Length: 450
Image 1 (cartoon, helix red, strand yellow):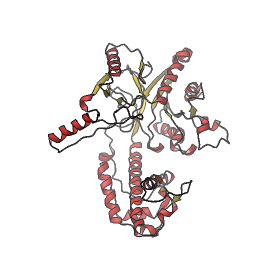
Image 2 (cartoon, helix red, strand yellow):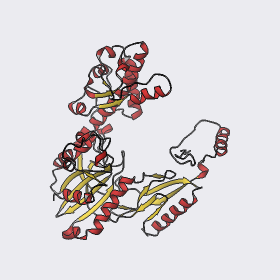
Image 3 (cartoon, helix red, strand yellow):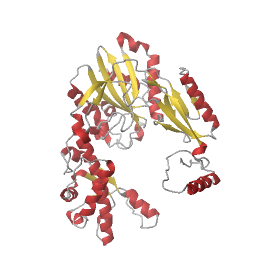
Image 4 (cartoon, helix red, strand yellow):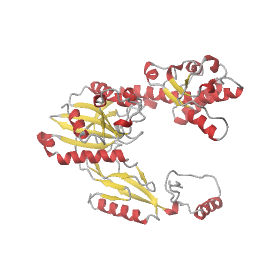
């Protein structure tokens, strides 16, 4: 069952699937009747349209980083044992913000609000840890690893105490008084905080060990249509009552099946045809009533694709001398290419620039940058660490790059105080999408070493 109330309160859209098991059919019938009485959509009210996708690789021998065949951390890798943090884990600490939890309790009237405007940062001390139930923490971690399917992870009970008295691996934002002892009720709260921190550390530690192993087995592979970044179809789900949108999407499907790839734009839905993208069409969807799988482009991603296409159209001389340009959307976690050294960074696009026998491969991520941790953020520093990966491949015909395309205007970037030279953004391969009309040209030239 798909349910979502729009901002206006007038429409019900699609958000998630509710599965109900082990109940009598009469209950299901009554539940369906209840939804109908309330004017809410049931599965009978929804229509799913399958939109075909046409690959455009056509034998191009494009190289891409990939894990070697047969390498799987759970099966072929060493069995990691949860331990105290390495330097990398200390340099990339777990962050837990407890303020939303406190604010939720304030809103329920369970406590009074704090007057502090700035978030306090605290650490567990040995005196806190001595009150905690370590057995309960241990079993919470065992359950956590089982839920994740990490059967190869070993968790020694004695490491839990060592981790909690070592505050180098986490940052905890919490009002100061929350870690003060004023009753045994506080201990229950400490137990909850410790559990959340340890679970986050367990995730970070396992992924670190997984990447450490897999990175040794990375190679450059020729891209094929069997790559997980290629999709066969879009599945578009919408209420049947939105007959106008259903009709337009059905028309788009007919056009694609007839090998006609004209662009269409309707009701905040747009099919984008870019002949240098390795499959077509790309879909943008800003309509809350429509669910697209795989996820459609957001506004920043759409604008980047259109800007790149415009650059190709108005600069035909760029392709003189045998230059070639290709683009592929990088799927999210579990399918696309990710880089753990950049906080499991999955850039949105892979761009290939071919010139004089060299493939310049750029990982490009159009995004808002307000949540970045400044210039030291691993996603920003990836423009340097990707060069380490390039050296590891030792293939002179491949050069690797990383770029961030900011759809956040420069004056709204709060973590930059505007007192320095703005060229530092360019030096870190950050370009501003809305303020720099020539940002595509700058990225392309930089990736070509010009």
